[in-house]
Image (cartoon, rainbow, N blue to C red; front, side, top):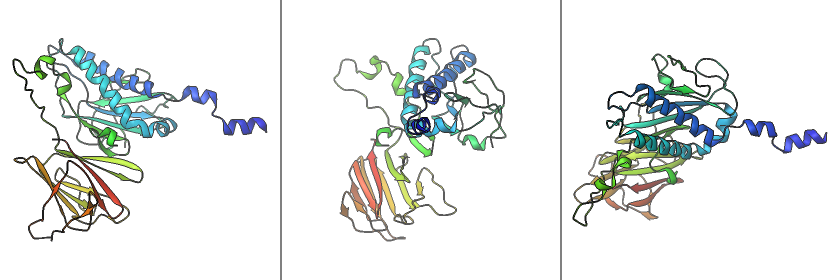
Length: 314
């Protein structure tokens, strides 16, 4: 009886040894990335995959779930470091796509229907994709390398800290490719003057919010953005953010944000009650010219009990 109680209260040492560690997860994805570069690059052209599906056992996924955004940043640090090492050999290193895409999924078995071992992952990758991996069941997807270093030819499967990461859904992250990380000191420092060039931002601002204890990040890339409660028939676009907010605090077409390039300032218009930086602002009427209010570069927008965090990136 004492042994049973001890086993229930204390983690099993053997299970702890088999648990997937963050470093092993990073190492196996990076191994896939490096293997693709070695196999696919030619002449002066560096070739590598930007879209990754990482399968791991459910218990490992549950353990890593809250750390996945940070792990993704760690993986990208290694990716950029390796590209930088190889760019002398392959100076044409721009990727095919514009974004890194990482989708982590719990799975008992891999794409070849073999069991995924505890403490390991299976990595499936493709050059680029705008679709989710679950929508690619009919396409031919190359697997770079798995935890067993096997190769497959087909794929068939039916928070403020991470402001640069777009959290598309649970376990699904997208990051803009950042070529500025490879800029040499001679390019980033001006010659003969005390001025320096300001790098172009890939987004104007970032909006973050929490739904069911999960923090999401949305990039504002266009000069005007409308924020609304999610309703049937509407999906988020570059100019429309639809949020499935369960409390009912967010209304349809609740908020609009715009950026004026000439003044380099942001403005906000409200079509339902909200507090912006703890201040209640005059509302706009649907169908009429919006009443625009200045919006600080770091602002909180509170609609009932729902909060949006706004951060300018320009």
